[in-house]
Length: 374
Image 1 (cartoon, rainbow, N blue to C red):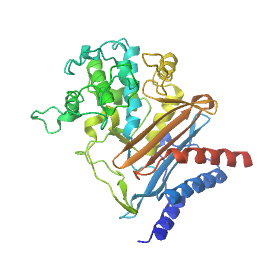
Image 2: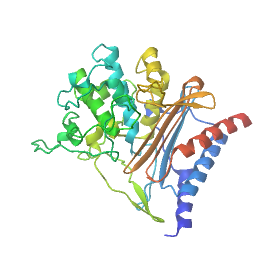
Image 3: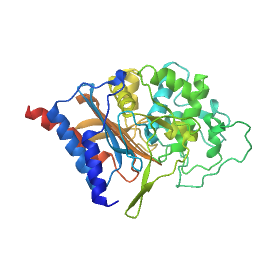
Image 4: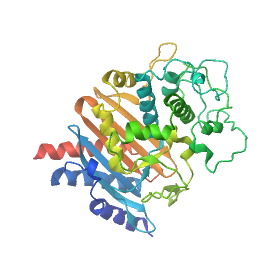
């Protein structure tokens, strides 16, 4: 298929695709003028990037006002992205783990500054104390994918899916050496958040996924958010795409269920927006705890980082922005909220080369432009 024809299909889908949201997160509709402006902003970005599929959600005045799918969830079968299409969250799963941990801190079941081996003795002694605070601010020195040797524990498992247990999943990396001393520097680590999930499981005395469902998913009335277990038939999963030179090809179906706390959740755009709104509303933790999570953490030498406890913290032209990005096989994601303005945007795409953050500003500007023109 010629590239021009492909982009024509994408543009048509950008205007026509999208279904009603789930009832719990049904948006208050934008005006027709605002919708057209948003559609145009998204379509322009998709033409520029060659994006196969994307879903967008907008929060304004503390309300979800827009949810829509664009392009294709499965290009080869001409299946459009709708608001029911399931996208992987990738690393936006990390704020989920951080919130679950801080809920236990509030309950007095978890100490932010205790050695994590108090809760998970299976994690080997590295000769230094590693705390939950250091894990959630990426200062613990835990290895990531390619910044040091990743040593996987060799053992035999009798269970069909042993890594659904987040403590057992530590076998993926727990014997790896630290890449730096705790507190010495900021070093992003998905494995570190796998350890956060294991600590939550032990401190909460229930399976990690169950705690997330009981204290985050259910209270926010999220109906599709769940672990992306490959052995479960989850309807409406998006097909992922990668670029091979100029060619766009289907991505792998790589299993990510073993890293649930660091990047293993999946949902539709309505639940992704519903989670963002729940964070914006302060429905999951107290205002004091939320403020602590949204405070940039400092290294041992006093240097401030741009990461709080599970969230990226930034000054966006004088406005506080709380955000997180995600990137893995089949997906790229972006979640951002501006608490003082009660604004937010969530974007999910199945095109691994696309940066969803580039769509956020044009979409939000389109909403405001159309609103001002009324």
